[in-house]
Length: 424
Ligand SMILES: [Zn+2]
Image (cartoon, rainbow, N blue to C red):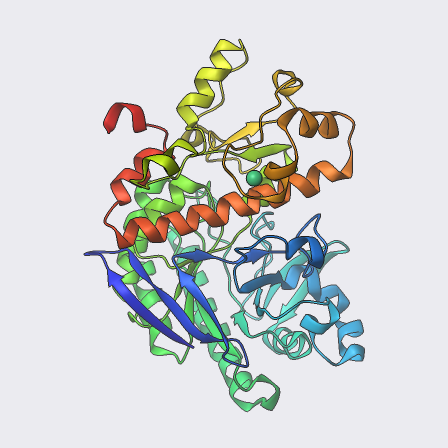
């Protein structure tokens, strides 16, 4: 794996490509970018065939040990690894510890174990059990074992220090096993940087993790709701100063477009792609504007701005949508980047979800049809929304890279936040 940076903007944002990834070294992934979010290897609602109709899929698929741990015996018996077990096409498999869309309870990490929560309840993992599991999963990348229980706001400094110490100790244990296992040849291990909201602990964790032979870094404990964006940016900036330039940085638990932009500017390369899933599950469709194209023809086909949508809502006399920054505590709440298709105002709206979107859903269906599918609880609603939401989100990351290449981050931020009319 090699990170080739084509542009580093002073003090933060990085544009580039992760080359030669996966066991065969044939795949690549553009950064800033996001991973493909799955449940047990499957993108929720979508079969592999349906998934492959999306033209711009990321080349890295994320699975979580919280899904997999309870199936260890079956995987051991199967022998050929999780990718084959789940029928995945040519993709890089990244195995993380927890599911970013659900929050694990705290109070279960010890000096020797961490716990993951599957459908059957809690599973306690020691470093040796953790590594045994990974040998059956056979991922291309994996996140090292970590104590990330520092996200609640009132976590003490002492507890935060302990999370850093434990995470480093787990990492050393994992590295020992990793280096001795032939089955893990060519597999890349990501070290986890902890430190809660304490700057010195963040710096210490980053510095110490960077001394180990890891392929990349997971920035943990900064998920939406745990710290505000201004503090998150400061913490990320202080960590990335300690990290080598040539290794990727993956931020866990952050997916909202405004937060993604701020974190890209602070030096984050990769995100977990769970946000479109959460939007789909609440019956919503992503519709925020990210067009920074100077081409007036293309601009005419641009998605509606949030401002336009809000105006539409006001004229329809509906509730105003909550602003994204007001509900950062709760990841299940609707944000200002999406439209709620269950609302009856869409019952006779014959426009596509987003004008000009090339996805299967927008090419073939209208808002009114989606509204009908949702109110009658048809499973197809989730399928069509997931296709659109993944497409919209991936295109957004494309726009981020385009904006970095063309020095248009400020314009993109205004577009995404829906302020385009006042500030152009
Ligand atoms: Zn679409």
